[in-house]
Image: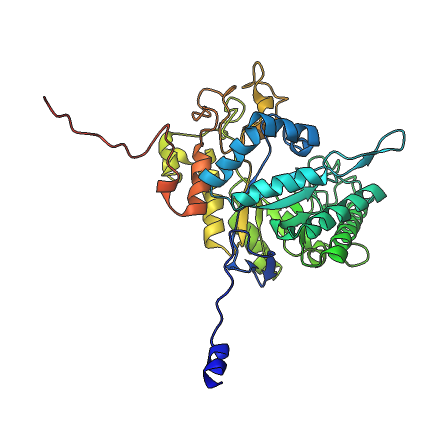
Length: 422
């Protein structure tokens, strides 16, 4: 009996689990799962052939990407090279057709299949539900959102979703002359917009939490819109609606976006300026490597910038800006990050791509090249599936080991065999 009591009092081993180990949760300023601290190492996934939108996960597109092998190819790049543990994706919710029928772009079956393929590679999902400033939650949207959570619960797979987001950039859907939509402008009063954004997030979070209180909810903001009121965008999470509510009161963690290397001051604004002590995720960071004729900053720089992004010749190149972000992620109290984006987008491959002003530079922000249209002095990593310097730096952030991140097409270290005469 004594020996049995002693055995019962001994610390019991924690049940072994894989890379997907229980639901992600917030503990102080950290994310944790059943294995302990879970540091988010994410990447935004769009398949190059479908554009920067939710079309990758439209059922027909998704089936085609499975059939041609492109989906698994890019999943392997995310897990095998970048060592990501999260894939952030955009998914469009249902809408009404003109005849009153419901159009559902993405089925639960598509999401389950994708979540399974990601989980096999040790990656969870961060699902951004598109809204774009329609602050009314339509019945078909609410039904679909609730049903999605029910479907994952029923299969015992809710832990495969790390979080859901009420909006990609909730302060960036207005016509405020390129300014922060939470800022008052000369002829623009932001309060109704703020009220609508916070009402939408309230409804979204309620739907999620009623069914799955353990699911984390966030919403993204851009921190690089024009500032009209001298209140930096990092504080948009803490602006009050007319009824006093704030985004920070409704979400489980804040998820700012920044591309210009200002991730350090950004988190300081929230930690010191606002006194925010919760989880902060740098939900978007990155930089384009082309089209350099339109902007000299949009370049991969020299090959040496992979290992020395802060060298004088690398300042104000894509590796420099990405390295500034990864340094902040490493040295500040971020709980993780999500790099934008996995691969360049096929829409760039048109005539005169290097000088056409109607092509957004976002198309060249991939961490991997896809071939096609690149510009002299811009992107030198051009082979389909080849990691750029920016991809290398994200790999180093995720692995802390340059040896895991060498590019076979342009290796840093070459084995030179001695010549032996016969």
